[in-house]
Image (cartoon, rainbow, N blue to C red; front, side):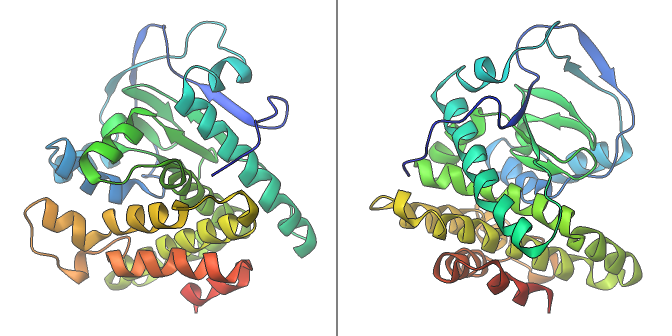
Amino acid sequence: MRLDDFDPNAINVEDQRGGGSRMPVGRGGQLGCGTLVIVLIAATVFGVDPTQMLGGLQQGAPVEQSAPAAGGSTTSESCTTDPLSRETCNALSSLNKTWEPIFRQAGVKFAQPKLVFYSQAGQSGCGAAQSAMGPFYCPSDQGIYIDTDFYREMESNLGAGGDFARAYVIAHEFGHHIQTLTGISDQIRSAQQQRPNRANQLQVRMELQADCYAGVWAARNRDRIEPGDMEEGLKAAHSIGDDTLMRNAGRRPVEAAFTHGSSEQRMEALRRGLQGSDDSVCDVYMQ
């Protein structure tokens, strides 16, 4: 996908990579959107026990992690550390430029999310960030967190490589930011508390809508899409479906345990956005 170079003055980037002292992280908030599926990926790719991982994060157990380097770094420096960092910043810039006018037209206030790079371990408003979690969105600080090494793992272990597959990951997390700004996220959390027996079903709806929003972004930048891009995105969506991840982890897929949707559902959600290009096509997941 051919994206314009980012404007360092037009995106919000924080960098927790590099030097700095080791510091314990105390109790954090709840897991951010997008983390549960990555926990399943961790079980498949890294051999992580998902129960222990979820339990430790939700209970806020102290974790040793790197603090940002003293003085920090500029957006330009953070985004040009390596090709994957630049690519991620370009995607963020495109997402901001695509969604801001949509919000303006709808009369809804838009606020950019911040992109936070970290390596191995970091700190978010939702608690500890760990590489095995993969990219995630934290509604508490409206941050998209990523260790770019995940992209390499995604390609080598999940068979989901390519620049569009990587852009889809960021666009999905950006979709959760949209849900935060529009209040959908709060509505879902409230409904989950009122109907805990449907918590997973409601979570799946929210995740599929985020996939759909990712497709809308791509459709609105159709002139930047190159041959094979859509196939890369759909393959990535298939690779991170709950049923596929469970099979890869040696487990029998159980729909009641799904949190993000099956491979077919995720592909269909992304395809819906790609074909519709209007964000209203994604409302179906909240009906």
